[in-house]
Image (cartoon, rainbow over all chains, first blue to last red; front, side):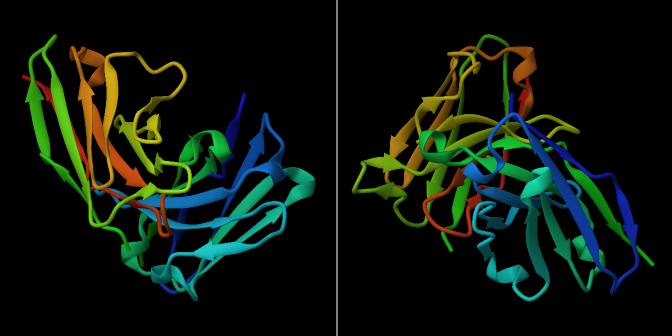
Length: 120
Length: 113
């Protein structure tokens, strides 16, 4: 079965960077896009972008352009999301989510989430 | 960006009664070449990631109870829970995946009356 296991909670100071990992199992890692999303405390869901694990190609939401970098390591079926120049309003739970592919589209399978707290 | 607007923001329904959540997109999410609406519904319970309930606007994900039904096309969509159960208490989101960025409605909080 599809599983996405994310790295643990992080506490960062403003201006720092954070890198969250998402280890995939139960399917062919290079066969499906991986999305990254976030959810601030008590708020709704915000889409950050995707990475094509096969080619490494990326598509970032304009809001995060210049601050976010999505990468992958196909040898260990792991996707990464790095966010730089952190601000207090970047405090959120960050999720990876696998595409449903041509069958489902959408963000079909989700990691458990990684809480990133930005505080001085 | 496509703006998704849900109504109502919150809803209280008695057990066994029907719950209806609406979602409107600022532009059509119907892809004419395959006649599919790129619209999904998610359920999120406290402390958990969202769970995909419905995709292509009306296709139920495997394992989702048949009391959950998605309908609509173009710009107007509805999620109906035919007979509310206690375990359905959650926040529900609609999402378009027609174009990037994939955008979500603000969420509808569903409670028991």
